[in-house]
Length: 464
Ligand code: CMX
Image 1 (cartoon, rainbow, N blue to C red):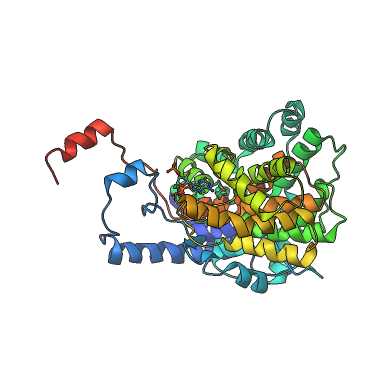
Image 2: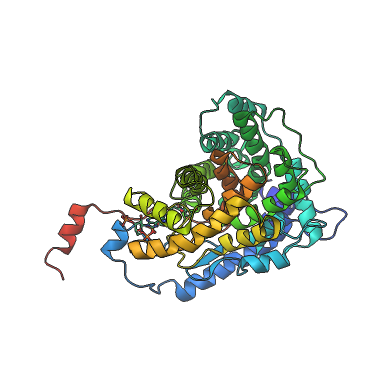
């Protein structure tokens, strides 16, 4: 009896095909899940071959400074969606931001890539067709509703609770309906983990606009939320929920914004936290909720809020249209006050962040005369020299967060405390893609070794 059931049971990849909620019907083009089901067995073999050939090779020594120095540059993780080069910046599956802007499908009449296509690229390494991207938009729109209790949870938050705390709270609560948590409790086999993790990840991404929109509306008193339009793309729906859906330039900004903020290899705080928590087989909602808490720190995602706060404070102190000298003095006063200049420096990058450049180009095209953009430009010509002169920061150049706030402000999204939520919506794309691959490839529990200072002293006593 058992044998006959086994014989009738579909293989894992066939199971994935059958269980896909959105299996292709009329269109012959594979859905994202169908494509993944084909790629996963190939990648399992690829990883096996890589480990067989290179598994014992060394990256070089680990020195004590790595342990005290925040593990800068320490090779420690596999992250397939993107790799960051210190000079060149990010490549998503080998493609630069300008290449993605050129190659990924766009909305009719639009010129920025649709983040749906970027997610497909992050997951598969392939550029999807416009039809595949449209199917993904529809799929996400169909999954977008959030449970009533999560709506109530958000409605009960005091408006004084930071939007990022509300965001993390809501995402964590989505774990209530996790397909993976349920399948795990019912004894799912390891080889099938990726299926429900894929479903959870799709649900997670799909539900973020409704969560973000509700937080924005509650905290900033924007009134009743419109519903998701199933005929529109993800960014359009997000913009609509924030009250900017009629502004095509803002919608285009959202498409660019989500694309460039989606992923930045695996070692940054949010991405690594998501991967780490996922490695305990916590479901994607729990893993991404944790990632959001890391993103909410001022040295990471909150820097986009901090930049605007800093610029506004500068304007209040030295006035608008201030001279270069006055700006320079203000930058020095920030440093002398023992604070960082937000939006500048990076743990890996050593040149201007291409994500900054992409936003700068957007500004040059859409808002060249904006006065805050002019200040951002002025700051760009001054801060690097000051940081170089101060002599501490290894990278004096601007990062992604130095530019995003001015674009949002231009279109009327002036509430700075909300900016990191938009970074969070975007970052889900990269974290979710890796969570799916980690479960597909059987990534183990993360458990690096830690040492105490006393144990290090003992270990190296009398050794040169
Ligand atoms: N302003 C002032 N000092 C800075 C600085 C900045 N923008 N960037 C680096 N430094 C200082 C560091 O605080 C550090 O000082 P201490 O030795 O006193 O601790 C010193 O220069 C060396 O730091 P580093 O090796 O160049 O940089 P880290 O890898 O340690 O830190 C980062 C990287 C991003 C945290 C840091 O550059 C910074 O604080 N920048 C401002 C905040 C910011 O923009 N964060 C967003 C980064 C992008 C993102 O994740 O979203």
